[in-house]
Length: 279
Ligand code: ADP
Ligand code: MG
Image (cartoon, rainbow, N blue to C red; front, side):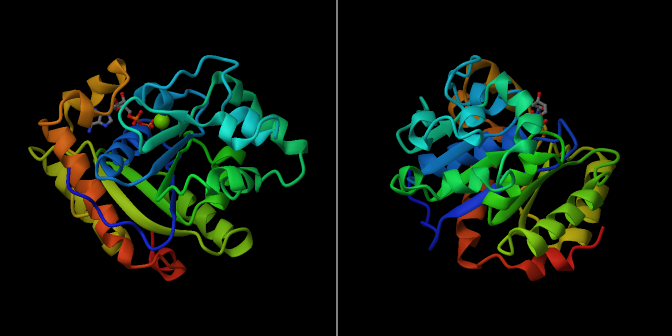
């Protein structure tokens, strides 16, 4: 595969939307796969106790496996938690196990509870691996796990499902991002919005797309992800759709979205972008 440009500095994405089932995990896994097969070094951090990203990347994540849980609690060093993905040597994953379900509560009483993921990412052990991209898959809530992701990231990628109530809750998400960016992490910006499960045959999908572009402007990727059975089948085989069926429309659309994300890297994200957003 031809190479995509390396970003001038490491890009760390929080993939967030507190609505479940909008394509966060699918987007994390497939964008990560797309970037990695074009020669970029990518780390996926699974912050959802469901561990769906770990599953889709073919990484073991049964209870007790060194994971984001032990990492956040400071019980292991980051390099102990990083696993290789079967897809290629550029792609690594810190899996999530069901143990992470307790972390929202266990973290509350710990020092620096919002900064724990950031500290891990900034550790020598992870720095030396020189990832070009780090993608953090968030649970469908705005609790301490998602907060850790937002404090650790410099960009937010919001997947939006082209369905009824697509923007429901997005206003709350944006207010949270703005709070984090003004109090905890001034680098954070909504750089990327991806329309998922787009059904070109329906008027609704088009209306949602127009509305989202109206709110988010240039943050919205030109490439949209169509609804495709192959996309939903792939995780069952422990694969991204790009590996499962490289010629499918779903695979092509994630390859295109990955390319678009990488090629936009020249424009440094800034807070003005998120400030402009109105929902
Ligand atoms: P989230 O992480 O936001 O909860 P997922 O990525 O797990 O959402 O997606 C929710 C469900 O929709 C999953 O079963 C997934 O396989 C399916 N799905 C996601 N994107 C697509 C798509 N483009 N076409 C068809 N099914 C999809
Ligand atoms: Mg998910």
